[in-house]
Image (cartoon, rainbow, N blue to C red):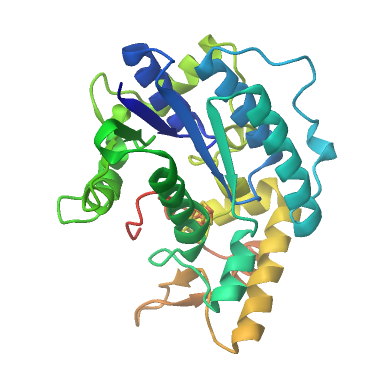
Length: 306
Ligand code: SF4
């Protein structure tokens, strides 16, 4: 029997992709696979667990999901990793079709270890914490000839799945014999609003990051591929999370002794220049102009530059 591995990101897209697959083949051949960067929003972990139970047709004991304020904050990475390892183990015991992988570092720890700050084109965080971790698990646990791997990419981001020029998750993994599919790139085409409706109809509450205006609910509303608009949104809704990432960016600049940043500035002509999170915050606080159309994007599993 063919096996279906659903790359489950804790957002609504991969939930909808997995639901579509379950509707087509039933729940028996389904395995959900989550790779944890340890800095997902606490409410994403709630949706991750409740959404997994929903996809797998399982029920959760009352109060199984820990309250948001019981999670150690992202600026206590060791305590948070320990907490999430425990939660992952309990969840997998309860939901045998759910695999929750933890490499053990968060994106900033990866950047320091790799001596490289990720950006919109080069993403060591998702390469190491997500793609390589998932690829290793697949190699150790699945037969490529009898496995289909589904990702939650939808029709509006189909270039991340296959850009027609050798980029994207399908050609990248196809080169090694793996079959990847993206159920939401196929008709009937769903908008994000349609997916929200499906989530609600299933009795689930979407992750709160969407309510704060984020289109991708990954890495707690932050991402090294974030544009000015996403960063400004994070600053508006989660100033303490913004300050944490701002501090980490300043720390790695000092560590590398290099003028690097995740974002860039194009103001005044002359091409792109580094724009730190601190500089962007100070510009916003001073009432200066930022590019409110530059949302950037997250393509953890595609490896395609934004
Ligand atoms: S969401 Fe962004 S920061 Fe997080 S792992 Fe993916 S690329 Fe890296």
